[in-house]
Image (tube, rainbow, N blue to C red; front, side, top):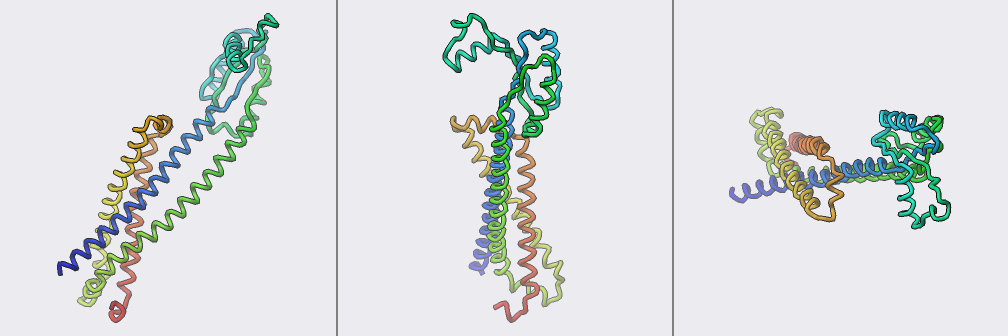
Length: 288
């Protein structure tokens, strides 16, 4: 009797640990997605989009253009770069001072615009440029079309890769959980059949198993959540992962935790229900 109880406990612990492992792996995948989304936004906002202003343009008109850009729905940040600052940047980047030869700073002032991520597709950037070049104080608008295209293509490929990996992981993990829960219920197959023989309804028999499935899902979610918290804390502790801390959006961790909880409960419930139905319909002579 004691040996059976120990075996039953072992099967239940195995089922909980299996669900915990699955939720943890799915949580890691979710963290990668959260980080990838934030990194993509960061890179898109860092794309150079520069509006050059004519040297002879009136300062009031330039300020008007700056205010127009700051109010535009596509602008995340607008910085005015005057001729002197442009010259200092040129010296730093090129390592030469053409003022020694020309005696005149022919560089134009500019407005550096950080675009919002949703406005960084090639078509949208081209549309913004076409609108700006019509302004009489604008001499030119430059942006890296190649980098923009490559970033959009890379983001798409990474998205498909993560989606494919997540689906494959989910299939493998559901199979693992299903096997563990089926083994747990298998150890109680005789009890299930005995209850049927004395007149218990199937819904009555399911009730304690389903309740335990939800409890197991909650325990597994708590264990996986603790492991994920330790993983995040370990990454943040490393000095080399300061960028991870800056890019990780903690607001997205709450919906991620909620999604993992629902997945854990759903997988545990469905696996228990399927295994129960199997033994509820099995003939007595097939139980041995």
